[in-house]
Each structure stands twice: as C-alpha cells, then as structure tokens.
Amino acid sequence: KKTIRLILGDQLNSAHSWFNETSEEITYVLMEIRTETDYATHHIQKVLGFFAAMRNFAKQLEDAGHAVIYLSINDNDNLQDFAKNLKQLIDKHSFAHFEHQLPDEFRVDEILKQFCQSLSISHGVIDTEHFYTNRSELGEFYKGKLTFIMENFYHAMRKKHDVLMEGQTPVNGQWNYDSDNRKKIPKEHKPLQPLVFENDLSAILKEVDRAKIKTIGTVDAKNFLWPTSRKQSLQLMEHFMVNCLPLFGSYQDAMVPTEWSLYHSRLSFSMNLKMISPQEVINRAIKEWNARPDEIEYNQLEGFVRQIIGWREYMRGIYWLKMPEFATLNYLNNKAKLPDWYWTGNTKMHCLRDSIQQTLMYSYAHHIQRLMITGNFALLAGTDPDEVSAWYLGVYIDAIEWVEITNTVGMSQFADGGIVGTKPYVSSASYIDKMSHYCGSCYYKKSVKTGDKACPFNSLYWNFFDKNADKLQANPRLRMVYALWKKMKPDAKVALLEQADYYLKNINKI
Ligand code: FAD
Image (cartoon, rainbow, N blue to C red):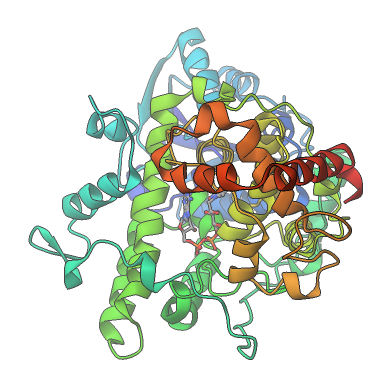
C-alpha cells in the first residue's frame, strides 16, 4: 500500500526499525509548523536546533534511499498544522495508509489520535524504539503503592536491563553512591571547557525571522554550538566519556560563576530528539569505566547511569501515568507572577543572575542551577507553577513537555504534592554557598537574614515554611525544619517574615 509515515521533530532515531529497508511504497514526511513553534515561546536556539536537526535527518534518510517530503517553515504549501498538512499530502499523492510513531507529548498524542479517527484510509502506530520503558510500565510497577519513590524504580530498571549488576546484586554492592558526590569545586580548580560545535545556521535563522516566530534569548547562528546531527551527538558523547565522566559524580551538584557546562554531558538535547539512545549512552559510559578502572571511580559512573536509566525513564513514566491532570496541579496554591528578571537576568542576586544569563545565552543550565537556583527561588516566591513551567518549557534547548513538566511541576515546585519528590526542594543561602562560588561576590550577604543586604533566600525560606505549615509540617522529612522554626524567638520570626514580605512586594527590584 502507498504509505505516508510522519516523523516528529523529536523522533530523529535513525536506528528505528522503520528505516531497516527502503521501499518505493513508503514516503516519510517531516514538517516545521507554527503549532509547534508557537505552543510555547521557545528559545531561539531551541527552534534553530530542532529545525537544523530535522533537516539533517531528512537529508540522511534521502541519502539512504528513502523518499522524503520536507515542509520547511515558509513553504507555500505548508498549512502549519499536522492534520491539515497530512490531509493535503494524502489527497495530493493518493496515499492509502498512514503511520506514525507514538508521540512523547500528550498534546501531540491527542492531535494525532483525533487525526487518525478522522481518516478514511487505514492507519497504524508504532513505538519510537528509544526508551527503556514503554508508556505504561511505571504505572504497572507502582500499582497499588501509595508513593512513587524513584529509587525503587531505578533498582528494578537496573535489574530488568542487567545494567551494572552481578546477578541480583548491584556491582560494588551498593545501589546509591550519592554521598560520595555533591562536592564543591575547589577555588583553584579550572573546569574543563565545553565542546562546542560551529554549525552555520544563519540561513535557518533568516527563515525563522521571516516567519516572525517569537523567541527568547540570543544565538550566534554562524557558530551554533549544539549538535544538530547524530554524528555530532556521538562526538559530544565521546567528549563526555573521555573528559567529563571521571569527575561527573563528584561535581554533579557544583556551581561556578560563568562556567556553564562543567562536567555535565549536555546530551539531553541529543537524547530528547532521539539522535542518540539512552542505551548507547549508558553502554558507552560503562565501557569507558571498564577501560579506565584506575581513573574512573564507580560513584562517577553510577551517578550518571542513575540520571538516565533512573530519573529520565521515571519522569517519562510519571508523565504518562498522571497526564493530563499533572499539568493542572498546584498543591501549594501558588499564585504569584514570575519575577520580570527571569527574562533578563537583571537581578542583584549573583546566583540567579548567572544562571538566568547563561540560560538566555546558551539555552542551557545544569540540573542544580535549574532545581536549586531558579526553581528554588520561584517556589520560595510562591510563583504560579504554570508560569514557572512556561518559562522552563521555553528557555531550555532540551525542554519537551514530558520531561520538563514532571521536573518543574513535580520535582521543582512541589505542585504535585509529593508524587515525584518526598519534600520540596528549597534552601536558604547556606546550601547555595556550600555548592557554589556565587555568594562570595554577591551584592547580598549570605549569612545576613534581615535588614540591608540580607540574602533574599534566607527570609523567603522561613516564610515558605511558615506560610505552608498546614500542608508541610506533618511531613516526616521536614520535622527538623519545623522544630527549628518553632524554637525561634517570636521577634526573630516576625523580623524574618517582615523581611520576606518586603522582598515579595519588591520582587522585581531585588
Ligand atoms: P547531565 O547532568 O549530563 O545528566 C545526564 C542525563 O541524565 C541528561 O542528559 C538527562 O537526560 C538525564 N537526567 C538528569 N536529570 C534528570 C531529570 N531530573 N529528569 C530527567 N532526566 C534527567 N531535562 C530535560 O531533558 N528537559 C527538560 O525540559 C528539563 N527541565 C527541567 C526543569 C527543572 C525545573 C529541573 C529541575 C530539571 C529539568 N530537567 C530537564 C532535568 C535535568 O536538569 C536536565 O536533564 C539536565 O540538566 C540536562 O543536562 P545534561 O544533559 O548536561 O545532563
């Protein structure tokens, strides 16, 4: 049957069984459309990165002998919508069968389900063949359980896929080596410089400008630094394995001003677009560790493997178990607007300024910057989770809803009331100072809690626990915090709450 197969922008998996053979009966279609560029306001690097990767992938398929239709953003016959474009193509070329791969996003899943229902030709859907798990696997794993503790899922994944296992026991005897990680980077340590690419995407930028797509942030389009093909993704992976893995775990949670990448892999963009698979990344890391036993400690490897076979698969599973309700959750009933300076970096707080400026410049911040700087502050400021989520979905090159919203609404903003995390990830200045070199050169003073130059994190931290006591004080993991708060002298409490109130009222000026 004459078949049309749709490939979404985050389905660039050249190892997919679809591509095992070429057939004259099959045509692939990829499309750059306004529904995708406009469902959120994206960073310019995200739009360019997706378009460039899609174009490279289409070319790769053509070179391999497949028939491909590519609709670019300003094509005259581009109707800027999946269903409309597909319908037009089916009519024009008399396709008799339609196929697609399961979308990772709920929104697109709904669009394609409806489209299939409207079709008068036959249709089929196939897995993306990318993840370790399928959509419903996590739900089955936690069936009948009241909590969704990631650690348990992670152990099961390691066992099921025989990753770093000796029979039923984990290699080295322990599952979790987090206590060996979480180190601050010593002052004299000069971090490795990131591998960046120099892709010339200026022609695509012109097209995006012509289409008047609204975007965030800046780009050097002549030297686009992100990988835009499988080949470059593999190069970035190699760079990580050889140079970063030996220190990945140790400095996983560390932050250094202007050092935007440190020992992180920056493979999320490549993996989320499926240019490389989680299996090959994990296998490659294990191979490197095996080859360099004296140089790569086990905790560095385990920390990395946990992020991918643990957190990444876990977030995907939570998403499919809990959507669409998950997107509406606001357990703490937070209503504040996101401070204006989240869009400019124009704040006197060094940690936030640096994390936001690098976000606007590179469309990237590493996990602890996302969680313990921008996420932490947004939560302490009582920000509406929808506002926070729109920001994260827009600003990061790797942001696709299944992994963005579970991290933002769940892990970072505790808006899910404790599905993803067992307590809110908030801190005062002391944690930030422990993990970073931000506080020393900040306008604010990390140890000052009230009055002039008091670090806003300090009073906002206590204000957060005071304001949310009805929902949080029974949490066993927060017993210590509430015990401390209760022990504090009444006038000290009042001063902290007044200070917090002042900052919240003047949030755009701090
Ligand atoms: P590394 O530090 O090198 O880690 C290796 C890989 O592990 C990552 O590439 C990623 O695939 C995976 N990983 C690590 N942590 C997580 C996690 N919590 N959830 C899922 N996968 C994880 N990740 C996204 O891919 N897209 C998002 O939109 C996104 N939004 C986030 C929003 C918030 C508020 C927070 C706190 C985290 C978010 N994350 C998101 C998770 C994580 O921060 C990024 O995956 C990571 O920073 C990507 O950089 P990296 O590739 O250098 O990661």
